[in-house]
Every structure is written in structure tokens, then in C-alpha cells.
Length: 608
Ligand code: M6R
Image 1: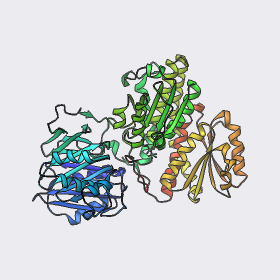
Image 2: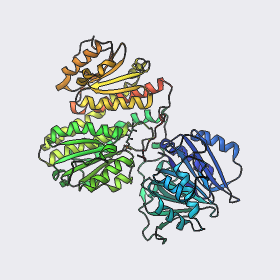
Image 3: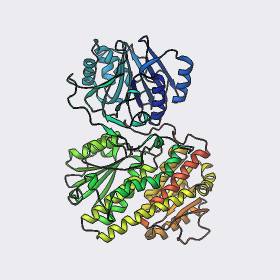
Image 4: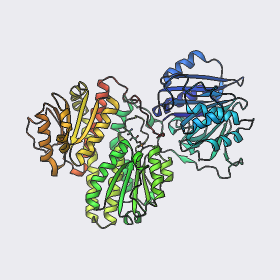
């Protein structure tokens, strides 16, 4: 949800900002804008509806002169439509400001500061800019502190003051912000993707601190006006520019599908010790697993679907209740959790606002928390009791692929360790379980190698406005992810149903040639799923069956069959999800859509 960047240094600020915005674009791409502090100290503003490329072309044709500091924004609209006026930066008197987040009390601030006649956009962000201008008397730190006391909501801001040329100020509350002093100058941004071309060392801007970028230094101030005594911890990024580039693939999504086997190995192997799962290096104690009587998994979207798969695998092994909640619902419930509940939070970005709120609620109830997170140093990683990092590298495509697989790899390892330390698994059973997990990796590679075959099914899917995914048990959990993937990047209405539930209403939607992607990999419900497939086949559905190589099915059952290798039932998700991802990818491509940046979406959901 919006990417922001600030820069002060010896280089041409325009290029740094535009390049940085290109790296942040996946966070939001409705409009983009920059503000430059020019050599004569004037502020030059450029903002345009559309992607960073449109802004770059506009800047090339309209901006003359040099600037060595400035701020830039790429927007995912929340308040007000997608217009040039609503694009950031916003000018307000002596203030120029960009914002990521939501100011919840912007109506009250509009009244309080009498801004009705000043506002030219419909955004909450412009209200914050004018409020800051009203509070500004020549002392930026004092004004920002005063503004912070007035604001409700989440935000990260970068700010220029007309009479402070060369300085960029930034502050955050909840919304992410990282900073680095590099050979190219001082930078602050929503995400490392903007900084990584210049450095692999950075720090997370702490909440309740103000940072000031100048061409020679980053100053960090406590809110009480003193220089901070303790400089934030400097972190090192464990991936490089290559990881954030397409590297010859046509889209990030395709590259990230291909990266899954490697990402799985990176997540699993460092945590294996003599064939057993071992979280010593993650500093996760076994009493986290032995001291609980139930598990509650909370996440959003694809991460929540990973939680549903993990639940279906863990509960029968551990024989304790494992519940999965959608974070945006959980956070407003009165959940039945307590100090005997292990709450597992799953988030690729580690910044999803609902998931973060769920984590905080879990702490309020006294539960111990374990976060499965991909982004090092993210808010969820920092606030959870324990963190298990997945090692997928940056995931840039909005549609999550490799993050899902590695979340599952991590959760399977958690399930295995819990079973071992709770005495449910013998060492032999735990080793066999991990061997099966590792065997799933070549099975994924097999399916990636079949991308051309999988591509063939797309003609049948993209001709239809609807598609259905059906399965039972674990296959139903996979179906949910298949349907989400397809709808978010191909815009085909797609629904996932537990196969046995169809006849209770949804089967009314099945008619001639409606594509049904049927998943049947679970032996104990295989015959039942096949019967359900026959029911939709009898009503004219076009059946694409995903099943194991060894499955025996009548040739007349499905119009197309795709076979995955014969891995143990609990591990079929890994090859199956590759097929589901490829179906969605080629459907999007077949409809000539923007695979990596689908409409209305953004990668990191930092608003409710
Ligand atoms: O960063 P998170 O894992 O917390 O994101 C949660 C969802 O927004 C995310 O999984 C989303 O559903 C996917 N991008 C869909 O492909």
C-alpha cells in the first residue's frame, strides 16, 4: 500500500527517486509523484496518474535543472479516486509531504485546523500536510512532534520544508520505513528494494523517532528533541540486486515460481540437524511447543491459505485443536485463546496491518506468539515472541507464490518438531516426515518443467467468465489458493468448494463447458471426490483433473488430466501449488493482463 522514498546526497535526486519508485512500485501503482528541492531552493513537483514509467516520461519532458534532495511516492488509493490531484506529494504552505498509511481522524483535523477551503485533494494525507504547516514555526522537529500528537492511524511520512533546503524529514507509526547512509547519500524508503542498489546495510526506522536526512548524515532524534542516545541496530540484507530483478524471466511471478525449489531448500536445510528439525539457531525453545494445549493460526490471503493446509496436516498428528482465523476478523473478535495457546502468525511482508493487529491482540490475551515471516526486521517479526524467517528472498509479484511454499515448509517443520518434543513422533517418524518434505522439492521441479503442458489447459479456462476449484480435505485447502491465484491475476470469477458441499447449492452454477479444476490427491477421500467430479461432469462441466501419477481413473472422467509425482498425501501441496500457480499465470498472460501488477491490488497491505 504505497511506496515512499526520500533522498539527500551528492547525486541527481530525480534519478535516485524514480529508480527507487520503480523498485517500490509493486506496493501500489495507481499514480506516482516526486518533489525535488532544486538548486535555487525552490520545490519542483511532478505527479501523474499511472505507473512510474509515465511519471518518468513526464519528468524527462518537463523538469529542467538539478536537485540533490527530494521525496517520491507511488500510490495505492484509499481516500479519493485515482487522479493527479490525489497523487502525492502534497503541497501545503511551506510543507511538501508524502504518506503511506491512513489518517483516521482526518475529518476532525480538517475542522480543528479549519482546512475546508485549503484542500485541493480528497486525501487524508493532504490534511496531515496542512496540519503540519499550521504547526510549523521554523522548527521542523517541534512541528513533527506536535503533528504526531494530533494523529490517529498509521503512517510513514517523508517531508520537505521550503526553508530547510537539502533536508528530508521522516517519521513512522506502524507503516514500514527503512533507512541507510550509502555511498550515494542518505536514503529512507518503505522497503529495501529501493535501497539495495546502493547498500546491503540498513536500519529499521524505530517508531517514535524522527529521522533527518542530509547529504552527509542521517540524524535520528528522540521525540523529546534530544539526539538519540542509542543508534538503531544496523542490519544486513541477505539478498542482492539480482534477487530483485527479473533475470531473463518475462515476469517476476514466473521467476518466483521457478525459485521455489531453491527457496524451500534455503528454508529447510539450515534447520535440519541429524535428520531432525532444529530451531536452536532461531532461538525457539521447545517449551513453546510443549507448553501449549492448542494452536491458533492467524493470517490473511495466501498466508491464511498456507495456515489452512498446515492445520489439516498438524491437527491429526498433534491431536490438539488447531484453528485458523482470517486476521481481519480475528482482530475484532473475542477469541478463545489464553496463555496455553500458541498463536502462529503468518505473513510474507511482516507488515500486513490486520495480521499485526491480530498479533497484538494475541499478546493481550497472554498467548505466546510465533511469527512465520519472510521480511527480516519487519514489524511482525520484531513484535512476535519468536520468529521463524522463511528464506524466499524478495517476492515482488503481487501474486504470492514462493512465499506460500516456504511458509508451508516452515510450518511443516514446526509441526514435526512439536510432534517430536511432545512425544507424538519418534525420532524415526520425525526423520521420515522431513525426508518426505525434502522429496516434495524434486516433485515441484517436475511440475515446473511441465509448464508447456500446463499452458495447454488455459484456452478452456480463459473463454469462461467463471471457474470452480473443488477438492476434499487437504485438496480443498489447495483449491482455495488455486481460486485466489486465478481470480487475482486473470480476473476470472473463480470459487473453491469442498467437493461434497457442491450439491448443497453451488452445483446450480455448473452448466455446459464451465471449467472445474478438480484436485484429487488424498487417498482416504479419493473415491468420494471422484463421485463429486462425476456429478459436475454429468452437468456438462469441463473437467481438469489434478491427481497423482499412480491414481487410477476412468478416461472418460476428465477432459484433461495433469499428474503430479507420487509423493505422500501430506506433501502433495508442493507439486500441486506449482500447477495452480502456472494455471493462473498463463490465464493472465492469455488474457493479455498485467501479471505482476493486477488491477486494484498491492503487495503489502498496510491499511485495514
Ligand atoms: O504479506 P502477507 O503475507 O501478510 O500478505 C497477506 C496477503 O495480502 C497476501 O498473501 C495476498 O493474499 C497475496 N498477495 C495473494 O497472492
